[in-house]
Length: 157
Length: 421
Ligand code: SF4
Image (tube, rainbow over all chains, first blue to last red; front, side, top):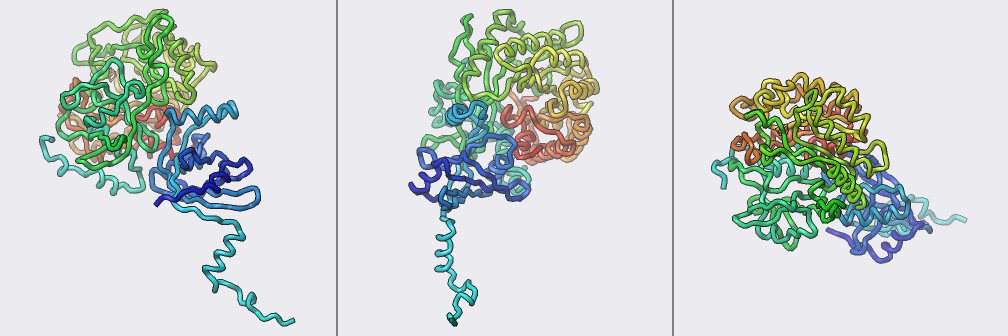
């Protein structure tokens, strides 16, 4: 089931000072995570990842994700330390074609030796906020009994 | 309908996928089977072909269900890999039904018995295709393309056919040119090559490799000298449009001597070389490729592959194979296990010298001597791809040429996409 990326999250993803981290699984089953600032949301609200290195571990893992149905996740961290997680499924890889070329030119204009190798399209399956304060409140509400007893100790003084 | 119950006699796509679950991905297996069985377009799919947008061959038409339409020369899968070849190049053998490329809601799908298996798209036409050189030559006559490579075929005739019965028995590549004398390759042609390559490179992000091939030319002081000369001139002409002394290049050509290979290395920007033993068995080579066997010989062709590694380096030399042709009858293997064992054992020996493999999936091309043969099971081709891949990994051979991006026609090199080196 697809999840929709909210306008607030789209705006956050497009900000330059937002950090984006992709976590993916290698063909050998190892977890790999890397900062990938080229995660964007396109005009149709689709999550896109642009890859610049043919043999980067993330590129290999993104192909692994399509080939063997392994999900990936993208963590979004704002400048003010809010964080969100998008769990997703890689559904398409474009390594050529007019749509690929559009991104190729865009990133070449930013830096001449940028050499795009793939555009990945990720279907968001689940989205949640992971900001510490938010997570703390949610966890407390959902699991009230996971707590150290001293938190309930009577004030003695 | 096929004339026999082949579906009952061999494992299905789903059964093969189950059997090798986790070892090989669904896209490569499906691609192998589409190559093996061939494909045709439904009327609905044919209606989606737009010659202004899609890559169709301007000179060719295909009859589908009795109707004529221009046909696209390739398909792209969701993982970005490609299926090469229009229906004209696919099997005419009635032993198995081809897959049907059908349309639904404006999208294309590979289908079998009415079931949608995977979405596909037509390749887009390269921008240079509609342009004309300053000599007035349409650029599509000078070069063709795959999604990531420019291809130039300077020699349009294969001279192994000059002696009756000496062409390779699976081959129909140059069937239409067996009797003509080839095109004129004068200064005007080489100028057209430079201009076409320069124009092609204006399409940013489109091309990742320069590919050149031809039929074999046997003439010259030493066999293939004239072929080498033609490649040198063509590569030099292409090189004028590229500002680097070396660039991603693959030449698929005859088995050249070390002297000839050194000339190619020293006088052009060439970086990768493929030459085809076609079948990894000395006795079968004599039967399947009689011209190559008589004029060069299996052992010498192999030796030339090894020398090519000295010239271009490990990972830059591939041996082309027509995977599965070792099972052609009556002289080939009749047992798939025995065939695979023999082929992989020979592959191991060749790979130990630094040579990788570019195997195609044998389908019985119209006009070829083997047109009426039956090809192996899908299970066989999957085991061949996995086996060649293992052999390559055993000897630490990276794939820099003929991979999923620069070619797309070799299952074992598609698998290298998720290998790290
Ligand atoms: S060498 Fe063999 S496979 Fe190649 S074009 Fe000639 S006949 Fe065909």
